[in-house]
Length: 432
Image 1: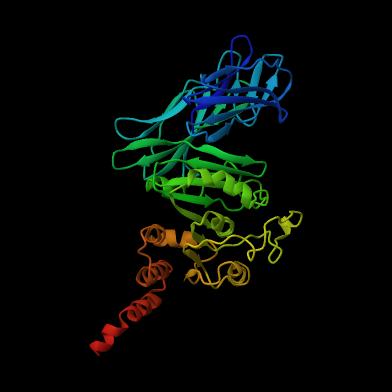
Image 2 (image 1 turned 180 degrees about the vertical axis):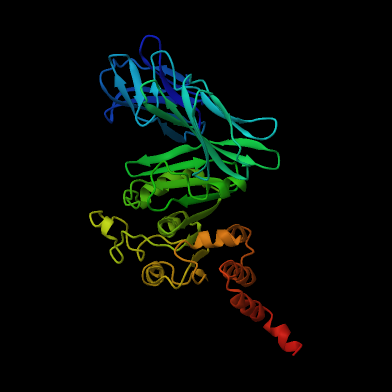
């Protein structure tokens, strides 16, 4: 995503700045209403004329390329305080008059260790996150630089800074996500462009200039700011990624097929497209994947807000999605992996998903649980499953190997032996 931010100048006026080199428009929002607009021009900086008053503000950037395609980015919301002419990022740190958010960044030192640095002069804590999980924490101290001890592995990283002032108030800042490459010990910033955002969803695009584009869907218990599903997988393989996120357990009911298509169609022209997700994300891969004619990979697909299996917490949620019997379906292959011993998963697939896709390519992993991808990851075969589909090498031998590895990781070696015997049964008969 083009580096775009807001600050307050010495006169107390809001300044919007972007690194994008092209046509840019700037919209200022107060209390969710546009109050000032600057139409497209080549200037990448704009000082808003709107006289500030108390309220909640944000700025939306519009970027137009040479082909007329428009992408957007909207800042966080800020609370304006007229008494000291400052902006407070809601849930974040403070923009003082004449300054911006504390300059904080990460880098690699000569030994290949991650270094977090900030200009903040006060108590600072540092949290290192890998694939959206905290893996190392440095508690508050006056040192504004910290070298993490975590041994790096391939994956997506970010650092969260915690700033504590003299009154004990804490503000935070989290860096962009970075991809670590162990081969050359480098960090690559993972910047996303927002393709479309609604009240309950956000669609972001990570462009890796690849012929392959994965469109992934986050699961339940996530927000618009949760790390994208399969981000590390896509980035480490150099694939483009479109991340579709829902917010606050709205189960994607605020996202229509038309809005989805409008958002993603501009970035998948002449691309090899895959729709991928697990659980709620797997349901969405199947529901939305047809309208873009994607190859679909769905793990334990289920939407717990659906009337057939509705959980109590979704009782008040209006289910807006169409029936699977009426949605557009893909002409490409459809892959579904799940645990057949989970009755609710099996029922949802056979009675509901089958209305659109009666004959998918099914891989069943008994006792793999609803979190079957975690079982495959633990067994070391998740990447094999996805990449064999992408490389068009997935077949009976690969599926048997995956099942055998999963059963072995579960301590079911007798079943592994049965799988191997079945695989070479014809040869065994020859020598018996």
